[in-house]
Image (cartoon, rainbow, N blue to C red; front, side, top):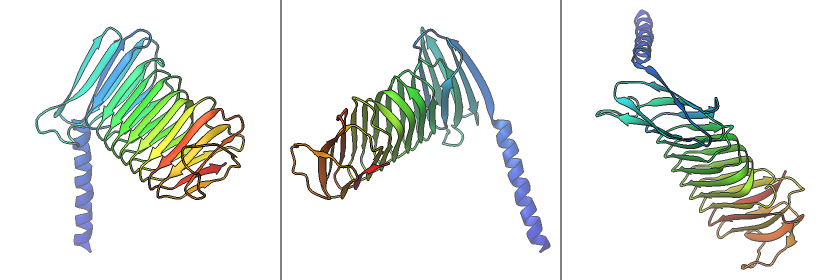
Length: 283
């Protein structure tokens, strides 16, 4: 019993020592840049999270936390363009090359973020936003009026309260969740990830949710105003709405394809899959 207690105590002490060493090796750097309207901000981070929020007008503030001496920060400014890059040194890996970024930008800034493993977080901006990652999870909320582009391999993508803009999402196998998302164009394409939409499809929008083998679930209120086409070649297709029939290039078949309109058909909605299930659900 005594030996077991001693071993456990040694393990705890070793963990504390390693934690204190890691803390000692981390360093915090802060950069400030003066910019004008519609500034362009690019953050490229091989390993680690990037979070962007609105901050002071005409100023970009970048706080970077480095976890080893195997990575450096390259930063530059040209006019209204700010670039920050995590520069990996020989021997760096996902742990020693990690950098955590917390960034404040003017709300109208155009932002580009790239990270292999993320996560990537953006909130309360109304400029154009580009987010790219491999396994990086992507979280965007309270964004309006800009052009939002997201590309991932298998990282999950979540958009919440994104309005009045263009939304384009491409993912190989990551799941995509859209909550209260509307705009003139909302296109999602995933090879095998699931796509979940919960909103009202806005007005005068073009909505396209496409997955090769992933399931698609779209939830809308009873008052939604859409012209909808839904089709899965090998998967089941279900619909909760009383649609007025529409002529299509294919023959609607119960359980595999349907087309029709609701209300004034203000927005166009396409739900397409090869082998995934599709369900248009009434909230």
